[in-house]
Length: 307
Length: 267
Image (tube, rainbow over all chains, first blue to last red; front, side, top):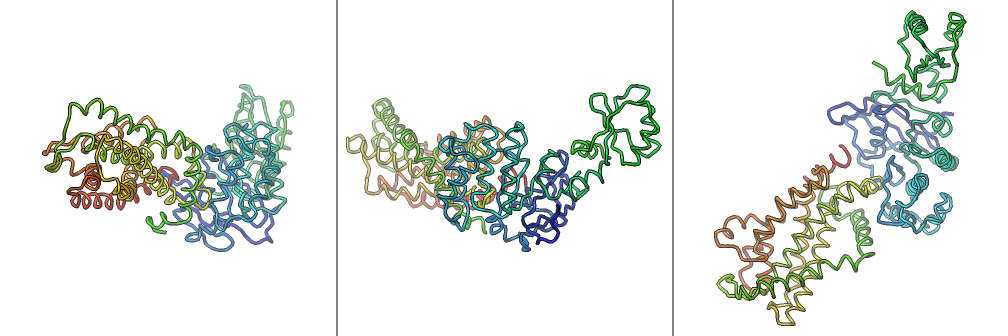
């Protein structure tokens, strides 16, 4: 649920960024409110990570403004960073230190210094189940536990806003769900989170609202269901196409102004609205097909083939 | 925050403490190269080359070769330590360990990271110069060479400032070199030739000393160390060294920051 009644914690307006001569982010607006989880979605190259990097101060926008708790961060980024935690997509912990030392060292990079650090580190080691590995170096951890360390390190200084850049990419399902639980707990504690993800289930489980980027622009904002409904359709018809059905279905789509759908392993995935699905069923009574709900994959595929 | 002001902020001290902590954890192995290298060099040059070079002419004085080479070894240690730290160690932290990226997600900013690499390289260069100085003092006690040991502390601030200059040069290459294998380019095309044309291990012919070597900050560092420890003409080399340090730090540190902003942040 999107909490429009809560005050905006982070606000980006008209963000523009050029990298390597390309306009990677093109006028992005977004808002993350107190205690809200905002999902930033989009296919590869949509500008998610660049947007995120501008928001947490890694990159300077070419145009636009970013405000944190109502104050523009240009010139006050250092203060804002005291209240921001960042968990990058790649592991960036300090490999010269143990798991426990990583938490201490990360905390030493903030002023005012986090209070009660001994208890804080002990609490994080327990909550993130890192206690058995406290004296090991991060390189010896499995992928799931490395993510836990990255997360614990990102919140060691008790931030109010956490940036998570694809927090579960590359993890096995068990490790992914464990990270979801940890993020869910942080959300329950009232931490505002901006996360990028490729996983529909992750966006649905963790986000109050999503902002969808494509080619550097915001193409939709809302709940995951409403965004998918608006951009993809209510249903996706999966048709095993042969030469004959291909012509018939392509003609049917063409008459309705729709382009040829994305083909995956010999099957066409056709996004349709409710009334279109009824027409499809009426016009192809003998055709075998499957109807499923749309996913982020459908959205990304649709956005990727946009002209 | 000015580019110079970042060097004195708490963020720079926090990262320096981190480097020191990592270093001291394995101090016994880290101290080995600067302590053993001068001993090896003294043995090699003293027992090997020394008998063939009984005296060296330096500023109208005849010096025993070991006496000539001692201050040069301190200068060489200063130069090599600062250069290799800012090339290899900084590159590994930036590229392979991704330590910088982790730090930059906190209140540490890129100017602090750049200054930390420079200050840390200069600190290590000073430490190694001090270790070499201790070894040379022991050798002096054994009668292997002559110099005024009470003047050794004067070398340390010079070593630190020169280390800052050499490290700011090294970081320029770290910022632009694509892989660690490419480090051979600055090492073999610049660092080693600078070490060669510097009067550290052998006196330069007058023609070289009066032309090519004057453009080499290591030459002025070696001659300044020698002048301080042995007594002799030092003012002109000190002035030249101070000029080199001011220009290198004033020009190269902002350049390092600009180049590394592009490399690390993509900005």
